Length: 424
Image (tube, rainbow, N blue to C red; front, side):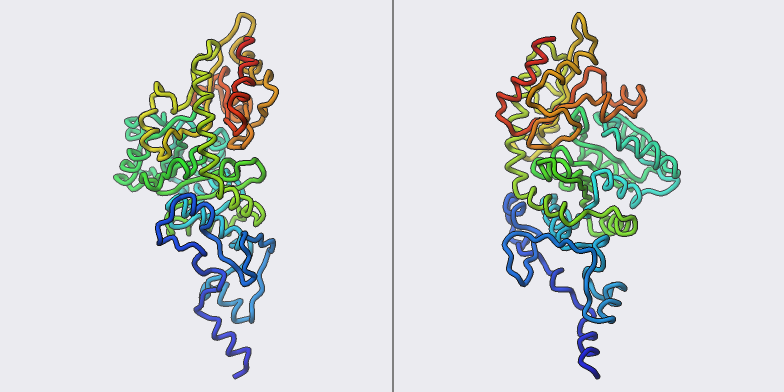
């Protein structure tokens, strides 16, 4: 027998070295910040301290038999970067650890993660039950594309537990919600929805983009799958696009198959950026929340603001629920919606535009979860493709402004908002 044949046979039924357990033993019950800094990494033989970027599309095998074993699943390892990549895997492992999930699957964008969820868990004839209060693109995906392929879609108010129960049908397969939601930061009772789903053999999918695992772990509250637009807080500096799903090994295998087959995969560079972003996630979210709590109080007391949608305010209808579900003290997120009043010369839309246009520091952009404070008018940006009726159901009024509170000095954020509000 030749040396190459011996080498080939010894390669079978073994795990590639770079698929070993990561450098941090998660069985030792480390805290969240330690996990955020160290989990998921596998050090190569180079002994690097920081995580490397594996900018490779493909991988080299030691023999034809080794290649065949990778492709037929006899041997676990990398096949192609559309399937797996070491940089992406590090991000997936770290995020899964932070969410208390068994596995994460990374995608090219947040919407890519939502599409993956639909393709993995829904088929023609199924029913998707979702909250009215969703990102406009999510509603567009459900209504224009999932419905096109035979998935029935309906919506209920995220606050109304009775409405959720009454809307369940025999063919309901997924309940989907954002908590907090976009753009009004509403809160769903995840524990209640979990019980409802378990009683009816339904998957509960929660978009945790606004809270992040630093504030809330939906899997601990009974959700089956967590969705992320990593583009937002997981990066935290508005640099790259990405998304992720987190859940059980079984559910994530279904999601992985969709990503592998559909090419909805995350790039290695983006994965590296997200991995570095996770290192400071908890620290950033603490600072975001501190600023947001003060900005919300300012807005709630301003005479030209009619309503502030932010669960950190004590009079918010979901304040108690948010306090119970969010494990960080005084951590209610940093996204809020506020509605401005019309003036003698301006209607509510014009007044909202005046406030936005009067800012000098705050960025007028539809992105959020950034170190920089951002502001937008949802009715004419993120939700403009919805019909007026759908916008009304989602609570997106002409006078509504969405604010993502950043990490600048909070006094400067308040002064910038006051420029327009004071001059209405």
